[in-house]
Image 1 (tube, rainbow, N blue to C red):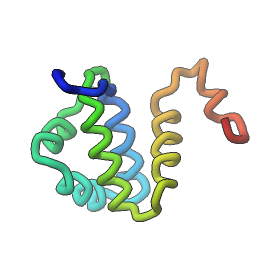
Image 2 (image 1 turned 135 degrees about the vertical axis):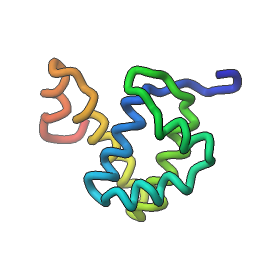
Image 3 (image 1 turned 180 degrees about the vertical axis):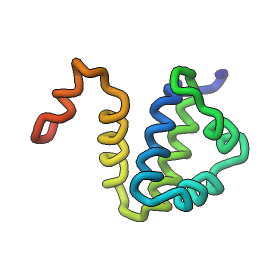
Length: 102
């Protein structure tokens, strides 16, 4: 990953697509994917939960989701909440479910 600013687990990428699928449907997922470069589309179509991917893919995916959803910066909090629900270990789940802002 030369030139990469970091990496992200596939499970996080999949969580973002799950959020869109559950809230806007498969058509919205398809619309988001076509906004991305073809190599990103290919990576996302086969993203494995335990594999690592360049952080830039998540950045481009998030930008595409934000553009498609049309709710501004609020989408990033919603995506983070979905990721926490999907990915936090059970010992940390209580923290994610606690009321109030962190």
